[in-house]
Length: 250
Image: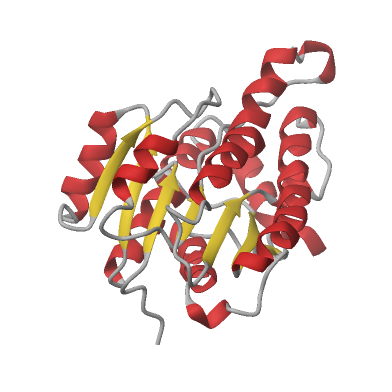
């Protein structure tokens, strides 16, 4: 049985969808969470909705712009050091090559690689992170390994996540810190529901047919996340886990 008692996990993208489900699963299993973001009201709403006030804390941070988070992490690790990190923040930009601007790449790479890198660099300091090691999980996308029209910037950023995971796993292994990636297919969230509401029934069915096992749920992804955070995955690092209903082999 998976338990996350004595775990303390930093999480980005926690206000909805996959990130919110991850917060719920971690706290249900006894872990503590620190939610990172710039919308304090939304973060507090998640804490209130899930009833996890005694297990959650908040750090104000604009995830679109790299900056130091060291002092906040040091303050929150005084009583209990961190054991994990989940980067679930993300945004989708769909534009053909002729319309892409440098700002689009900057935003996507900051959210997916640069900011997580800065956070991990400071989080894994010996004064902040558990001396027993722990686990870092970066949420990517199946599109990081595939191509699609209009997704050049997005797929490039998600592919970079896969490369970051491999190299970071090697660098952090002496500290017994594992680094793994997760590549979901289409997961049913408020964001995808809004997208599908603008499509015809036939278009949605065509997209779903590309997932042999159908669309996923946020719980499908959060279940894999808590496994990778737990001791049950203690010999797994540097990997990219597809969780896409078979999309990547279709």
